Image (cartoon, rainbow, N blue to C red; front, side, top):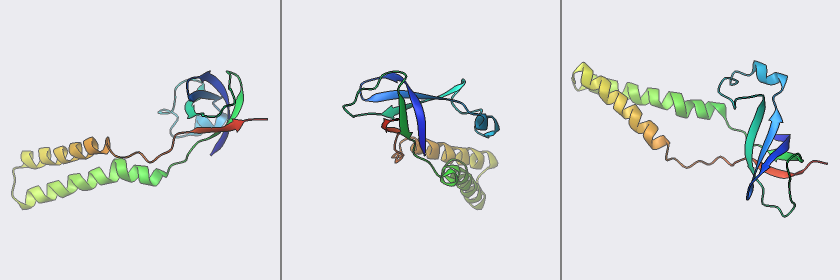
Length: 131
């Protein structure tokens, strides 16, 4: 997704860009977990020789993600793990408390391993100055 944003702060090879929230943000289901405040702030990559300064308008390429994939990773896979451990526990005649805590442990291990997975998502990057 291509957005026009304004430079807020310039760091070494990163630039903090900002954009005022639009009226569309009010109806967005993710507004409660989105960046707080009246503006959206992103840290974008910038390795060009052209200097940027606060207030410059730039064009930012923001990678999109597949919400179904994210939902499956965060919600569906842990549910399957929990159910599989519970079914296995009952099949092996484990005590209820052991089955329950084993299933919770399986989900905990999954989320722990999920933290270390390779993040293939590219960060936002500045394409250039807006004219």
